[in-house]
Length: 475
Image (cartoon, rainbow, N blue to C red; front, side, top):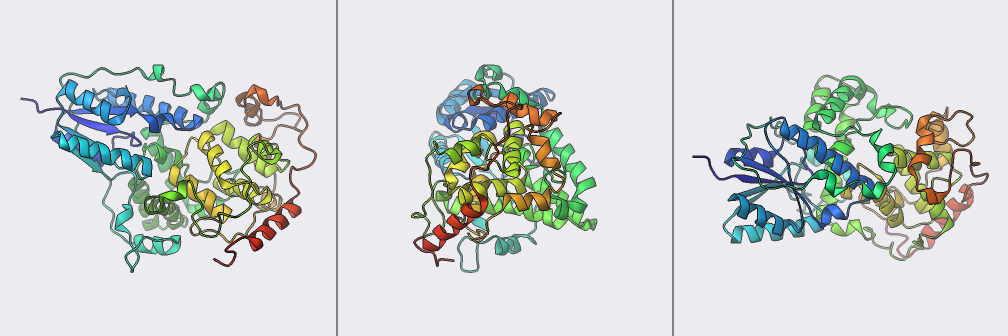
C-alpha cells in the first residue's frame, strides 16, 4: 500500500538537485510540491515578484517532465497547509529554512501548530552553506567583521551536493491555482516584456551558466570582475535568490577550480562567503534590515524625503553623472546591476546626495530581480558607513574617476545611455520602453547639462557631516 503523501513546502528553493528538504520528503513518501503565495510573496518588489513567477513557471515544467505537479495556493501559510493536509491525508511537511525575522516568526508558528496537530514538520538547510548559529567567534558570539568570518569557514568540510532523488507522485493531486491567474508581473506593467529579454530562469540555466563561468571566466575573475562592460562575473545571484542553484553547488564548483589551479577561484569562493556573512548578520542582528547597525548613526543628517530633486533624478537615472545613470538604467532594463556599479550608485546617493540608505534600499527592493534581503541591506549599510564591516565613511566613490578607471572607453555608459548618441543600442533605448510613461522621457531628450550635485561640494558636505555627527569617534 502506498504511504501517505508528504508536502514539500517550497519557498526560495526551486530546484531538484542538492535539495535536502526534497530529498527528505522523497524518502518519506509520495511528494506534493506546494508553493504558497502568502503575505511574504505579496510584499515583494515589482521586479522580484515578476522573476519569482518566471521561476515558478520553469520549475513547474521541470516537475511535469518527471510526472509531478507544482501545486499553487494562495493565503496564510498555516491555513493553506492545513487545507492541503486535510484534502490529501498528508502527515509530513518539509521545507527549506529562511533567515529573515518575518519568515522565522511564520515558520516557528507553523512548525509548532503542525506538531501540536500530530503532523511531522521539519525544516532543512539548503539556502546557506554554513548555518548562522554554527559559526562563532572564540568568545562564543557572532562575527561582526567579514575577514575573520571567512577564515573561520574557509577550511570547513562541506558535504557534497545531493543528487536528484527518486520522487514518487501521489495517487491523487489536490487542486491548484493557475499561475497565470496570479499575475505575478502585474506591477511591472510594460516593463515586464523588457525584463524578459534579459532573464533566463531555472535550474538548467543556472547550471549551464555556472559551468561556463568556471570553465572559461573564473581564471580572470579577480581582475575582470570590476569591469562593468565585461561579462566577467558568475551572475549566480539571481539563481541563488530563487534557489535555482544551491550555494553548496557553487562552493563545490569553486573548490574544483581551486584544485585545477585557476587563479580567480579563491576570490570567487570569498564572494560566495560574503553572501553567507550577510545572512549571518541578518540572523543575529535582524535590525540591519531597517535600522543603522553601527551605533552613533541615528543622528546623522541623512534626508528621506522622496520628493527631493536629487532622489527623483537618481531614481529616473538622470543625475548627470553618466556612470551612475548607466548603472541605474541597467537595473531598470535587466533587473540586475553590476556589483562595482552598485557601490558607486549607493555611495553617490548616501554621500554626495546625503540621502538615507533606506531610500536606495527600497528602490533596489523594487527593481532588482536578484533581490536578496540580507545582501541588499548589508550592501547599502556597508557603503553608507553605518553597517558592519563598513568601509570608512570617508571612502567616497567618485563616479567620474571610477568611470575613468573601470570604463575608460565608455562602453558601459554608451550601452545604457541613449541621449547624445546618433544610433544608440537597443539596450539604451529599452530603458525608455520600460519606464513609466508619466516620467515623460525619451532618447531624443537632452542629457542633463549639469549634474544634480557637484561632486566636490557633495563630498565636502558628506565629510563635514561625518566629522560632526554624534559618535564620530566610534571607528
